[in-house]
Image (cartoon, rainbow, N blue to C red; front, top):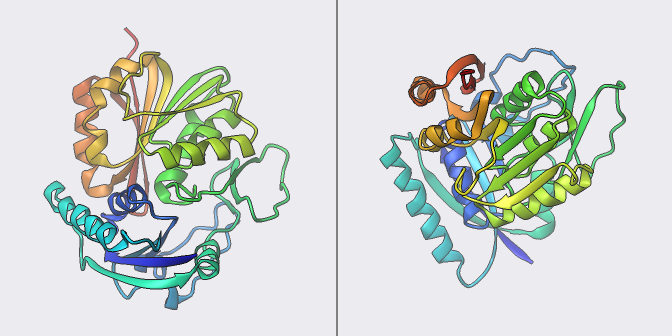
Length: 314
């Protein structure tokens, strides 16, 4: 099968939004090449090993590569993607250069192109993300391994927003608690919550491809008895309350359902929000507080923010 590589030269701020647009358009995987990665100072907290090739990164900004199967509708799909990306300007998202190019690649080239970026990585005190095609030996007995094959769903587990969410779950999930995962993507956060001892996890995503991907990854990690995956838009039609709600999605979207989250979170429970670019931190914080949440902790990694908030006990 022939594939087309769609390359978008944009900004760090636009990464989450553009990636989501690409996945909704049917992109089979996304590669993110951030120029700032080359200059970033790294702390060797968990024994990570970094080896970056400057040729793989743009001179400035971020290059997002997506892969679309070549069909008779490819040109129309590309135009729809361009329109959707340009529409992000209405949300005051900086698109930077916003240069889009299309290149034909073979399926074998595509498989190599994106898998070479994805290897086992220890992202917290307990969690290690391992792609399903890699072999990995557990380092210590309390290490929690999440095996992932992202496929066409968003979420490899190594983006700062996902890393912070998993770290936040480590701090908040206790045995027998219930969790709702809004916009589950590859299912990585739901799997993490289950492995931390949650009694039940309800994972939701609007994208049918993400639902299937999450179900497959949940089965691979042997937590299907704990995690239920359903197709749904945010917290619409969710009636059961949960001890923890986690949402790693766009800041603009988070701010639209903080009232719904307040209703769903149990008294004394917590709402973990991520996918927040640093410039939107105060906006999200204010929206959470206006809905009644109290801020427990604000986590920052690179240009991204995760907020742990709590519903007061009444």
